[in-house]
Image 1 (cartoon, rainbow, N blue to C red):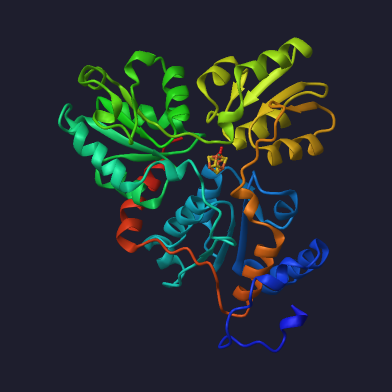
Image 2 (cartoon, rainbow, N blue to C red):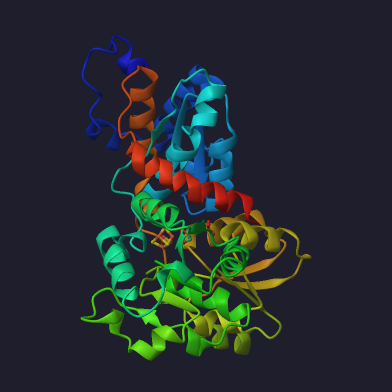
Length: 382
Ligand code: 13P
Ligand code: SF4
């Protein structure tokens, strides 16, 4: 902070470039200084995939569901700096600035900041609102869409959450997907699940829905998402053709190799992994569940874990009493989560501290209102 002592709120925002040449030690100290200066007015949230140095400076960490709950529950802060990806910051903005939370803070909005706006999610980008609206209309030509619940994975743009809100749908996370599908089937006959085909398929299979009743909708296909009419009229869950490029890298061969070389090893994966990996795993669950599973296991347990590399490496460091391996021989890391580094965090915090927030995430009010309907449903279903 000392280098900026003479700056006022009227002057232009600090440039990012000089921060990039500072050492991590300096950045850490300056971030710490802002945290002390702002106290409870500042809430730094960190997703489990963040780098260790970012996690060390986060007030709270969690999976997508937990982070949504934390953003919804905090009544003290005036700013949330989200160390995660774009859809998470959008969700935090919608929940932290909903009417009920605003009333509890006498109308004061919470600034939600994403330290690097390029921190997106490639899976979320695989379903665009125009594509989803076009698919819905086309589906309406062969099935009754009044009997279809649109379910969007939280890894999606707010406009898709709003679409679900307008059409009686709901948002799910990797920690409540089965409960959300039950919720949906209690109301209507079918589900359109986007954007992650793997989470949709793995969850539906575990609920006993036959694979034959899960056609895949390819938004780039010429007609009916690449399906014939019968596949859609017989469907229970229509899966959007989207995936996570990080989790797509894990294969059944990796699981088999570990089992061969380490008899007794347990395979623990995220449900964004392809079906063949998920089916072979001993445990499948959200990042929060992966952490809890390891924490609850006795010393000497052997694990091969199929999720983002930073989380697996942190688990290895935090649990030396267990033997933890990364499930793939190649690096699978989320390049967009990795964009949040100490330089971006320090830059955004120091601008915030002098009253010139940068990289604000503000969801359009109409989209926010409809998204909130589905996010509140999501938080109720566990
Ligand atoms: P979790 O909700 O399990 O943290 O997953 C988020 C995510 O993006 C996984 O790739
Ligand atoms: Fe998106 Fe995959 Fe990264 Fe998760 S790991 S944020 S799904 S790209």
